[in-house]
Image (cartoon, rainbow, N blue to C red; front, side, top):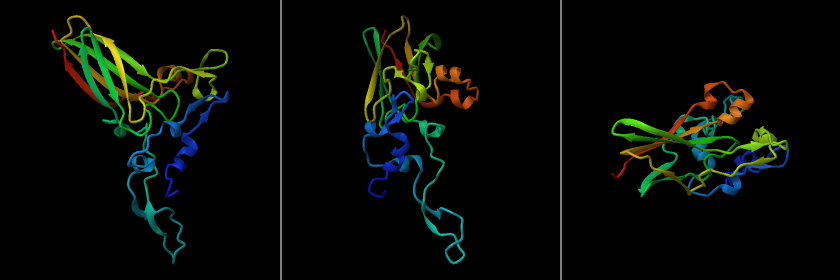
Length: 220
């Protein structure tokens, strides 16, 4: 494992298949190798501590190199701050939103129905005159064509995730009379469709985890 530290992580996070054979997560194929391994981001730095408290070495627990086992990830709000980058440009009557992903895996990824919300607010001076949301997520259907969770799905919608070490460009129309536009990215653990299907009421599932925000002054 020292030579291929990511292999243990990929036991669970690669080639996840639904009961109908649909592959809905394959972080191994999307992964772009960088300077860090999975555990360096998701388990933190090595530190001297005990892996087990059983006293088997001269009546003492063995001190060794260990990492934090909370497995920080999609459920950890602080990890999302600046996890993606934003660029805003205007051309004629259109606004181009470029979302760059410096991470070694796609976002969103890891489990089905996770979501990046692109919130677009148009202002005239300080007054909001229009607002739009774009939802980067995957929708799943059962054999009967009914809404499904990933683990029971027969088919899936187009992959809208931002590729590892890549980018996605969204084109939206500018709003008449708007003098500026503000774009904010947030991450949600489970999209509304699946939250409704499963009756997920806990705020943890719907909480918007802030990623980044940009403002562009528009030309008159």
